[in-house]
Length: 416
Image (cartoon, rainbow, N blue to C red):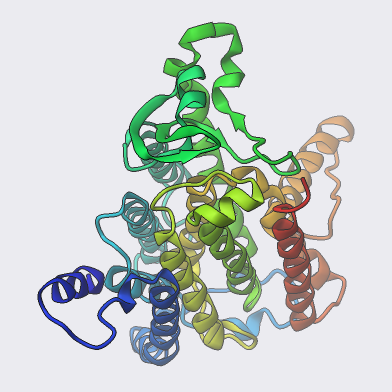
């Protein structure tokens, strides 16, 4: 919003620093600062308001250390996170950018799902909350919108050699006659190309190759594999973030670390020189995601001010489903979805611990009549609580592992 206002003012009036708003780093830094301020300053007021409404967490006794002390802690704090993301993003990002519009849609829609779930639990006194089927359907819808937009919107393209694009049968959106690279004209094309880690410069994979048996029709039918994949990633990461939100500051801190990596990827993918040097796909106009991701990081860090041990507020599904969905959407739009198992390794471990626990329990019960467990409790962080490890130590160690995974994810830009 401010971007468009400043653009109008700079075209019609002269003022100091009139071109400053055009720099993505300036807008990202300002958006980050505002996001941090909103979550830290207004977060306290929102928490007090939640306390007056008596929106407290109902804790089921699972025999975990310090668990019952959290009884009555305000929940639905995800409102703080979402507000701290959306307000600066709307102010400082370009609202005519399809990437930004998709991220705002994703944030609002998943916030609505999580908020409805928490509202039913808190105000309707229904511990089950929103049905699992309704949550999944909502996440599927978000994934579907993202996938269809990537497939058919002319605002989401890849820059590449025009001759190569024609040879591979890609839909060319625009050819730049005046721009020549390596003796060939440059074009913006519609393609399902994506970055694959550990491949050499220029390496990448087109989802059309999964339909090789369809020959020339693979391009028209690529949605058969692309849409289900995007939906799977969206639901998996969103729910995994929800499972991770079990200790004070755990999901918030891990999400902030992941956001730090994604902001680097957004900057690289939206900068022609860096993308060419590092051998990743150059995605025109995707640099606006730097602003949105900066808001995401600021919101997480600001919320951590209140969510770190001992937490004064919990994010609830209002926050956790939204954080996971934002991370998934950013990775997909930046065509870094194949790095999610590394980057979101903590989320993956938490999710797998639940799957393995339930599967093994059912298997042993069917075979022996008595269900056995792999972990003392799932998700994984509760296993360490059962071993007697203090909550702060568990969270800190999970953060350190997340930082290690983040560093390795960044290194994949050069490990080719």
